[in-house]
Length: 238
Length: 315
Image 1 (tube, rainbow over the protein chains, first blue to last red):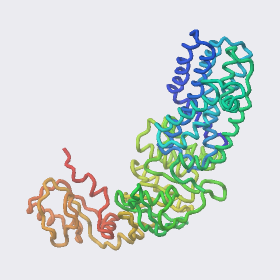
Image 2 (cartoon, chains in turn green, red):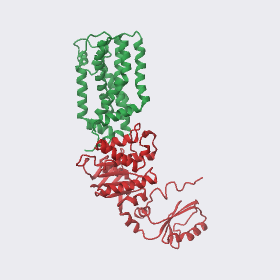
Image 3 (spheres, helix red, strand yellow):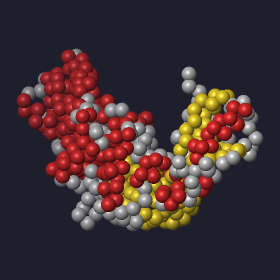
Image 4 (tube, each protein chain N blue to C red):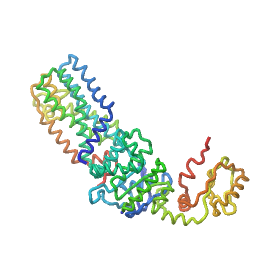
């Protein structure tokens, strides 16, 4: 059963060509006007960061709740798939799919920020960590939601709060409590990589984002059975 | 192997009882059918046996979820099993076979065999979103059976199946029970139950009420036949409408008549009905069966052959 859920997620995504095309096209449509405008890099970076966080958080939470409502989560988990395997393989597949779908938009954003080649690698690293973390946040949000509408609401709230904590909307003064929160926030790496691409920040740290990615995955493994039962709506086999 | 003792379960905030003090025991190698009308609590009882619901009262004893060789011990096919809509039937079936613990080769072989047996192979490459209701039901059965579980729980397994698929399913279930599997069906399809079940348990309004071996239950009904008369213009009939060797056991439309004399009672019955002002649309004569055994045991009728839809006029 090694990569059963992972491969099923990929097959499903590739079978849904219209949705795949929309997931490529819509971010591109949102990014392109900003990239082509004379928007200051700091503002453009904030908009891009919001898009690159909202996209995976919603994309993880909403389909998971929809599958739960249709009884698919219960069926899969009672058919023998372990909850941790299901949730993490699903998030991993979604992370890579999101990366592929967002790459054209990221490329346009990178070009619009006027970055040089050296900024690309940090940007991709920040993006990957962000997408993984946002997908895991989506899993937690889905487990707390009781409907698709609730999951969308919770996803928006969680993503925006974490973006705010990451200093996307307002950078804290040096050594202030806000700056300390920012330094430990999950999406800082992406935001700073975007700012660095625009030349408004010389360097960035990846440590906090890496820690969030690892810790959230660990938390999900630890509470996977509870999350699975909440999503399935029925007791899981012991 | 499976045992429900005094089991009760209720739905909703008011916990309206769907199952009350139900008793059921199923041994390895036994096919047990829970027979009852819609809303009797059959599906809830199956979900309790499968562990999808925790009983509010009583206990359910069931085997551990995995067999000693690591395969999923349970096979479940409900009426509303969801599928991966954008994947093919074969991909769906393979997923669940692999999830149950089969390796790739074993899963492929088991799935292909079942797709062939249930005549789903020609459609197996199409996405499930294009499947008919019957094809979806077959696919759920393939997923339930592929890993050859020692416990099989099937909720209304024949709904949506054509005659060939029903026959194939009957053969598959007999094969599984011969291999030692405990099989529980919830159904009101009495011909299918008569064909495959070793034992029947009647269920009405959440309670299990007796039962037995289908052959014994039918034998206890004695000789004679059940005559079902569908009427165009149902007349007012006396409550004890009867004649030599026959009597009405279920008034209404269709009218159900118990005839010890079998079809020899037909001329007199028809004369009596026409004299009473009835216009007969259709008459069928059936030997004693589980429908009648059920009616005799619990005083209610099962939906299906005589009931649901029979009183709707055609054209």
